[in-house]
Amino acid sequence: MPPAVLSQLLGSKTATDVQETINFFVVANRFQIEAASDGIKKMLPLVWSKDTEIKNAVINAYQLLFLTPPPNFTSEKSVARFVAGNLTRYVPWHAVADPAHIRSNSSESIGRLIGQSTVTELVSFEELVTEFTRKEFITPSTIKCLWSMFGAQLFLALALAHTKRSS
Image 1 (cartoon, rainbow, N blue to C red):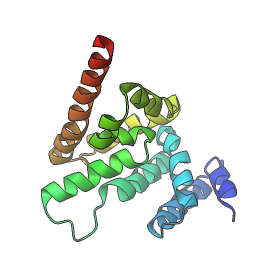
Image 2: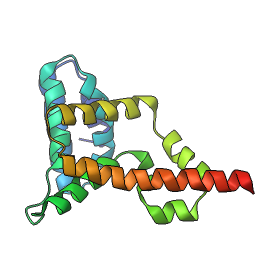
Image 3: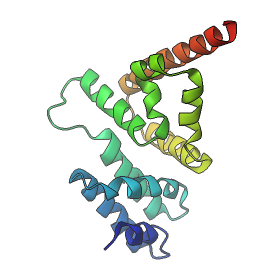
């Protein structure tokens, strides 16, 4: 079945179709099938589903995708880095987490990166992270890691913007 058809099944009125499609994208992602990333991104708004089974399927799928480290990640710090990296992987503004990217680009490019996400994607991602936090799937170590990644980058971006205005 072509990926476009599978993505359409995410909008099916039959909960089982949606759940099986979500499961397919998770498995396809594990086998590194390129088309899986589009499906994974398209299932994000389903976190708002009123159907509890679909909403839980989405949360569980993203938990597997983002929060489940490989068995060789045994230290709390390595797990936190793994999870923080995954939480930023599917969001178009993930390049903000790369200090080299910020040093080599102006602060305006960060705005363009953020601007590539639709409001629906950003709000849905926020809801997903809220669900992860509510269910205590995200550890304090991961939150600390995210703050260190983005806090430093935000400071650097603001400093670049200030320097540019001063010039």
